[in-house]
Length: 256
Image (tube, rainbow, N blue to C red; front, side):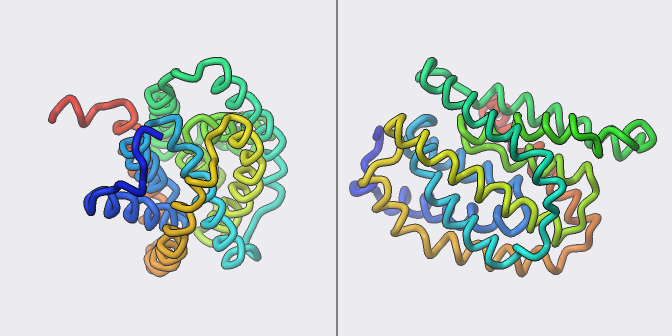
């Protein structure tokens, strides 16, 4: 690891804790927040190594989210996305093995920004998209993209968030469907991350220390989400996705 967590300063521990809480909040129904922990952990450990540190933390959040929201999932949408997402995970694994030093952030940022732009266009001209979001092909396309981006950078939250937004899911079904999708996909990613040497006994010790903050963040996020109006909820998903995309593209660094 570029940074040994046992030598963390107080500031680094605070950042790691913030990332853990952010994971929990993202699992409560605000997937765009998930890019917060991607950025923080990449700054602490490096982009590639951080994916293996984050993955077990995501699984903790996924298990808790499924326990809370499992009754609200839409399995017809899951079946449109999961097979292609599995292929996306394998594609991402091949890319990571072949190009270990490839910087994926900007590529994912462009993709997320393009998807967000499509959603803005859909809100402006809904008649153009009446049939497209409901098609099997669109679901498979989003699934493939989500699988690849989650394997490469754990950054599929905005991708799936935008898909579930386009099909018009209410908040509870949005959270329940997302919870099942990411639990299944993140468990699938574990053996690939182990093969790449990204999950170690040392990283798992850090995961265990941060697990309570993940669960606390999920309950905190749930309290926030249940108080949001549907329109506000949809807008926040979209705004977080755009901000995350700008962060991945390095837009904010240009003004620093």
